[in-house]
Amino acid sequence: MRVFVAVEITNTGVIKSIEEFQFQMNIDAKSVEPKNFHFTLQFLGEISDDVSKKTILALRKIEFSNFKVNLRGVGAFPKPKFPRVVWIGTDNDGGNRLVALSKEVGKILEPLGFHQDKPFKPHMTVFRIKKKIGDITEELEKQKALNFGIQEVNSIKLKKSELTPNGPIYSDLEVITAR
Image (cartoon, rainbow, N blue to C red; front, side):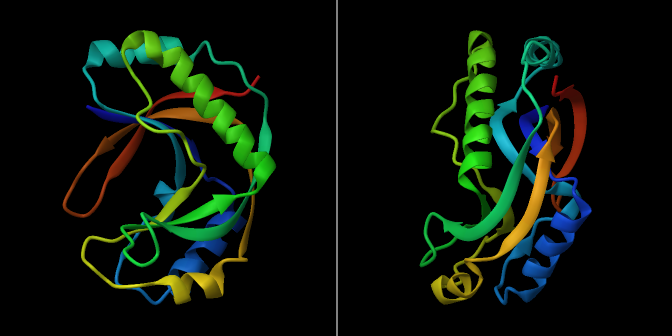
């Protein structure tokens, strides 16, 4: 099964403001569905049921406190001139807390053979771009100061991702709540 560790976006006000942003962006791209809004703390890839069980046991050892993340600002990877993904960023404090949580996840999963291939950058994907659409710098510039609202982080989830022609279907394998 294909899995990742994530923080979900559950604040309905934040979700609505992201949907408005997706509607207003005039680009030829596939919008991420609101039910799939999340920060990926670590992508684990394809794992067996046995490794999934060990991963759950390891993740249960993580201790963290609730914190808030202000979702704000937009950008594109790898860059606005040749975008593959459009993302929403975070404030410094919330972003730093997400980075710390991602590092904690990485540290606890390393003994199971998982390694973070690159440093975690707090962002939430809102569009995926399959074909070449050209430079969207101007579109992003108009929206760069947007503030989407505050999400309280009170859990992390081990999520299963099933890829389908209509997009991914995510399901929860485990929920680890803040203490």
